[in-house]
Image (tube, rainbow, N blue to C red; front, top):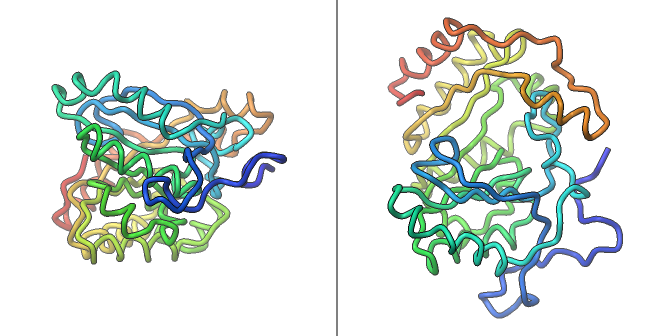
Length: 268
């Protein structure tokens, strides 16, 4: 299993962004890919940067290749910003912005912070951070000040199930969610509905009640589990853990959304 660290022999990732004058120049990190997307990575059409590496091992991950550092390539913040700049006119016209995703972008906080700052202040783009929250303690106040929206995955309310699903603990995600609420940062929560795993009524109710109490969550995406990423698991030489798990029905997904809606949350 690949550990969430830079490849052997690679220079360590910088600990602070170059713009503050303290870190090495230029800021570099491990990039998986970038893409333009609409509607799923924040409002409008967005330039989405996928960073490589993730400390979680989610059983239903549909992009398992992004969790592996070895499948990324070293890139500078300059090169990524220059690429995004080619699309800013179109993105502004489409009411969109830029999203840092992964993998887990907070595994590389220096690059993530640099990109968020430059997307926001140099390109004038709305910024979003897509994260599990497990490494939320790595997000500095400056990084979050440059983040207009956090897309936060709360994968389960049941602690034992969370660990079974991800190999990690739930508490850091909840702590990060509370910190974002204290800061008043806008949050969209994502919850993946997996039959026979995350679908127990008490689990959905727990996530919904916690989310509603935060006060800064403007949207909840209840995402039905799918098996579309199974081929990517094979490509990286691993078996898809949930290959035999059925996808939820429309009625099951609608019922889960109704639980969040009952707590006064805007749910899609």
